[in-house]
Image 1 (cartoon, rainbow, N blue to C red):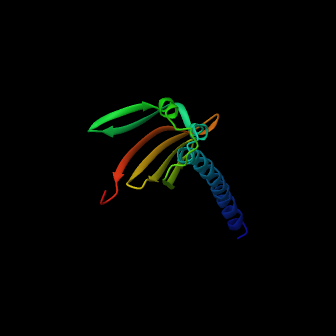
Image 2: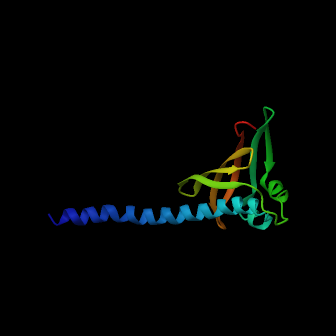
Image 3: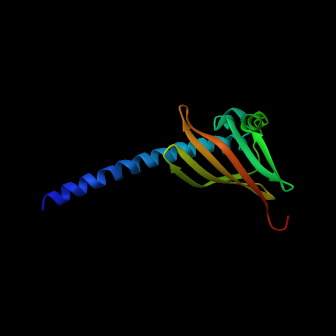
Amino acid sequence: MKQIPVLLALFLAPAGLRAQTDQKELAEVAKVVSYYLDGGTLADSLQFSKAFYPQGQMLFMRNDTTRIVALKDFMAGARNDGKRTDRKTRIDAIHIYGNAAQAKLTVEYPTFYFHDMMSLLKTKEGWKIVNKIFYREEKPNN
């Protein structure tokens, strides 16, 4: 009978350790996507750029055509005037699978939303956004 609690403890211990690790990884991914969100809101290109892996890409649709932009070019176009942008941001979801992650973000402007889907990899420098796709949704009555 004493073997059952020992076996149960051995079985549950890795899950408990994994949960702690998962929380740490979730916090690290949230920090990286917050660099993107806060950097954009605060017009701080240095903070904004900390989120991205320079060799990554952004893909989106415009007029039924797929557009591809290098993340280094996207970063280069970031505002850096310190003027706060009128928008609200939120992290809707984060999913982590080993050294790969996905984050779903929403950026709300007065007349529309951006729905961002980010792919991240854990590099030697930590988590970095390697791919971004998005959809622009107009608010009703606009």
